[in-house]
Length: 163
Image (cartoon, rainbow, N blue to C red; front, top):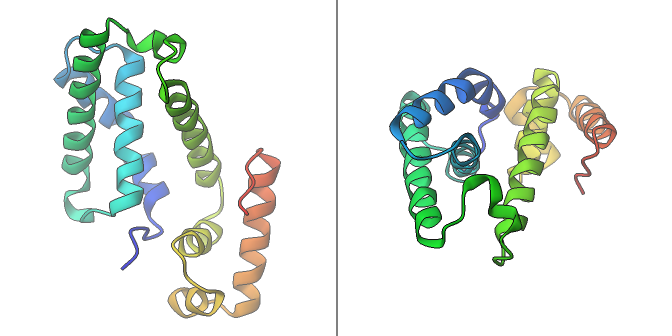
């Protein structure tokens, strides 16, 4: 079963701000950048694993909080603060931050798509064929194709290229 369910954008809109507030209160000693990094990590894990939607917010809080604690411990061990991680010269640190920023930007761009386009795009990214998307959504193959062409075009206009 695919981890993507087509409701990820709605979940992000509903829970993103609250998630950051909760994690910020749970993790003392972590700056805003660290909290944002931890929350971004939790959202990536949601896309990867697709947890139960009835308990998704507590799951996100747990994942983000654990990641924030890990980052705080790493900062203390290395003497690196959240705002200077990209400048450390540590392998993978700058790439991780750039990847998280790009992911956040892509997620916001996908969130701006109309619901039908988001649904078709999520199913395509999850590995479904056009026929499977049509069956799952009730759209015709022509409608699926049009939604995906328009979604890709919009994302390209925002600087994202989905091959």
